[in-house]
Structure formats: C-alpha cells, structure tokens
Image 1: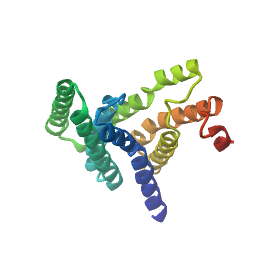
Image 2: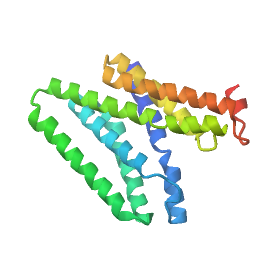
Image 3: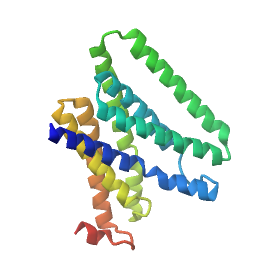
Image 4: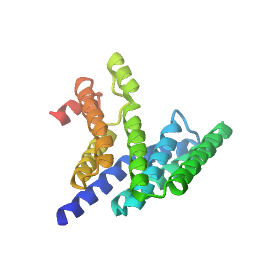
Length: 216
C-alpha cells in the first residue's frame, strides 16, 4: 500500500513538473506583453488531453488521475488565457477554443447519453484518450528530424525532457500495477521520445551547460 502511495505521488510530482514547463512561456508573455514565438496549439491540445483523462479518472474513481489532470487542465487554461490576452490575432484563437468546447460537448453527450454501460464507456474513452496522448507524444518527431539536420538542440529543453521521461516512466509503471493498458501503453512513446532527446543532447550538446558531462 505504501509502495502504491509513493508511485501515485511520483506520478503527480513528475507530471506536474512537466506541465509547469509552460510557466516559463507565461513569464515571457507577461514580461514582454507579447506571445513572441510561443505556440498556442500545444496549450490547447494538452488541455483537451487533460480533460479527457480527468473524465476517465472520474469514471474509474482514480484520485491520482483526477488530481493530476485537474491541476494540468487549470494550468493549460491559464496559459491559454494569457496567450489570448497578449496575442494580436485574438479572434482565431477564440474560434479554436470555442470549436474545442463544442467537440468536448459532443463527446460528453456521446459518452454520457448514448453509452449507458460504464464498462463500455471506460473502454471507448480509454481508447480515445490513449490515441490522443500517443499522437501528442509523437507530434514533435518532425522537430527532432530538423534537429538532426541542423545538428543543434537549442530548441529543446533538457529539464522538460527529464520531466517527460520521469512522468512517462511513472505512468507506465502505474498502469502496469493497475493492469490498465490505457494508462500504460500511451506513455511508452513518451519514454521512447525522451530517450531519443537524451541521445540528441549527447550528440549535439549546447555550449552551456555541457549536457555531455551531465549524461556521462
């Protein structure tokens, strides 16, 4: 029981560390009163992912999933609000948010109204959330290819890579302990892409700090 508590705490801690990486973007937006080169879509997609897993955790009665994704969704919403406040083109951003809310409303209606069996609802929702999470983990692969071509890792964050690796690893173990493939499988790509990033930092280390020495 104590081991499960520690594992749950690790999932919460490492995942929130990963989500809090957006705080640096938030500081940039507030200090510059501009969105600079920050992208809006990652905040939106992560928020949708958090809300999906929050509902999954609610259906399972899983406090760890609910805690992590409630805080995660709140942080992503904060980032989006700040982005919209400081962005020049606000209308398109608001349209994206409204469209996402519409999709969430339709999805909620589908799962809550059309599927009465909780087991079927859990399976379908778990499958949907898993596919969405895998897509999010694999979406930066084009950027990784660019890094290999340019031989530069300046656009990568080493702390975020560490947080992603630890969070993905803890969730894989958590899913394995609970025999929940919907939690375990979608986090495997997070481990794989993190290891690939570690390798890129090793091959193309930034000048400061020396990540080659850290990884040695």
